[in-house]
Amino acid sequence: MLNVNDLMITSLETVDVRTTAGAPWFILDELQDATIANTQEKEDLTGKGGRKLGSLKRNKSVTISGTNGLVSGGLLEAQTGGEFTHKTSTSVAWRESLVINSDAATTSYKAVGTAGAEIEALCIKDTDGRVIATLEQDSAAAAGKFAYDPSTKKLTFLADAYEDGQEIQVYYKRNVAGDVLTNESDKYSCKCQAFIDVFAEDKCSNVYHVQIDIPKGDFSGDFDLAFGDSQTVHAFEIEALSGAGCGKNGYLWNYTVFGANAEDAA
Amino acid sequence: MPKVKKICKACGKEYEACHTPNPNQVFRWFDIACSRECAAEYLRRVEESRSHKTTEDEIKE
Image 1 (cartoon, rainbow over the protein chains, first blue to last red):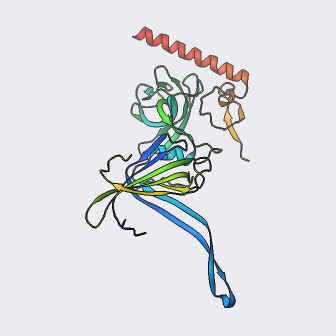
Image 2: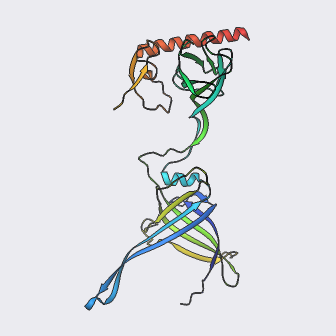
Image 3: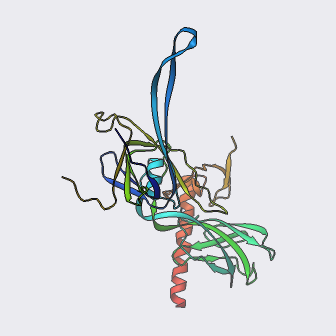
């Protein structure tokens, strides 16, 4: 059969990821690149003098990989096997530099934790910013000790022990509302259904939409989030699996080309 | 294995502390004291100190 579907891929649009049951999960729409790597093993069947008679082909494998320009929450869920939950109160570690005035200082936020030990550490600094002493929280201010009242956020120091303007560093935990994803040690990356959408043009500048449908994929749990002097990108890898539709389907992917403005077909 | 030592906030004695994290902020007496009794005594002092402060602050205001 003559095939004239020769296309220039002009734009990588999205990877639309759905659950194995088909429910929408997340969309990667700031993709920098995507690759569909196809492999198969081939063993030569030989005859007299080693001449090749045929081949035994097996182990067809497809891996879809790519890089998203944004860190995707949905992708993190798929890669860790976790699920974002909105928590009205979750603790975060906090530290801040404060200044003692009139034997007291006030934390910016309410420290939480075991009553009477809400402040995890308090360091006294010299004018060069070096730590010269560490104080312990106690029920009342004393030598080497300070008191803290979470209701007023007030730190109290021994009277006249420190001059006004003395810098201190305080470490504590505070509660915030936030979305939390937990990477459990005994939960693993998830399976999914994925659709890769790209735009293409033929030699006559007709625009086509190409959709690559991976009916069953398995996310790799290997990923890096590199933070530093360059953009943090979110790379992913999905291994296509045979047997979508409860084992009925043996295909790894479909590559469908249709007009960008194609009408509905019957 | 290295042991974590803490000073009991009630009696001032050094004790072997558990150093596992407490992310849910459940009250654990061994975070502050060497025994349940010492923890109770320390909490009593903290509550007393905080209630006094609150009263003083209210009077000042």
